[in-house]
Structures are given as C-alpha cells and as structure tokens.
Length: 142
Image (cartoon, rainbow, N blue to C red):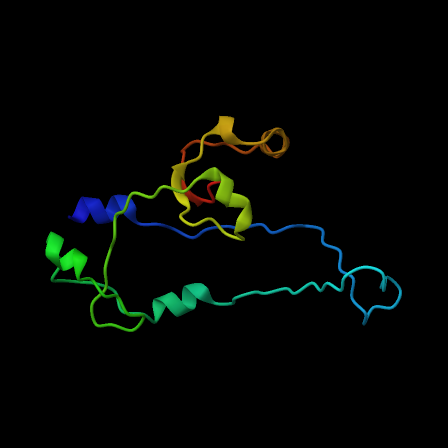
C-alpha cells in the first residue's frame, strides 16, 4: 500500500491561462460596440493554496483497501473524519477537452526533452540550463 500511495502522489499543477482576451464592456466606452453582445473579463485567483493544505489533517494510520460492497456504498462528504485515495480508470474523450477550463484528470507524467516546444528548447539552450534528471509533473491532458 505504501508504494501505491507513493507512486500516486500528485504535486501541484501549473496552468497558464489565455494571454489575450477582448471584451465588449459598456463601462469602457472607448471600445464598447452596442451592435455586439456585451461581454466581460473576470480574473479569478486563489492565494495560499499550499498554506491551506498545510492546515488540513494528513492520514497517518489505519489504511485499508475497501471491499467491493464498501465501494458500492461509498458516500464521501466534503467534511468527514475518513479520507479516501481512489484509483480509477476514466474514459475521457478528447472531444470534451475544449469544453472545460481545466482537464478532468491531469496526468502525472514524466516530461522529456523531446516534449518541449521549439521555443522552450531554445530557452534551455540560450540560458545554458542542464536537464540532468527527468521529473514527473502534473500536466493537463490536452
């Protein structure tokens, strides 16, 4: 069980949002077009997520695998004395990817040099960075 947990620990996810957006906001008269539908840009951010997680209880004992009947009757609440690790197989068609802001289930993937874009490879070369060890990262599945 220890190895199963260790192999499935997920780190943080890095998400880089859209860099350009254009609204049709009536409160910005210089660019507002009354012929077009109104639209707005909202920036949403969450601070101190790491600090929040550090205040939460960690599982330290009494680990066990559930039986099939326990899994069928599983009822998980947001605030509960019992926490769960779930290993599941998901069928998530790529046609759904663009209909969500974030992926349903990011992959815990080993990033290799050949996965970098030409721009990233150029940055690595220009700054003399050495990629001595490949790391597993939590990546959106695009």
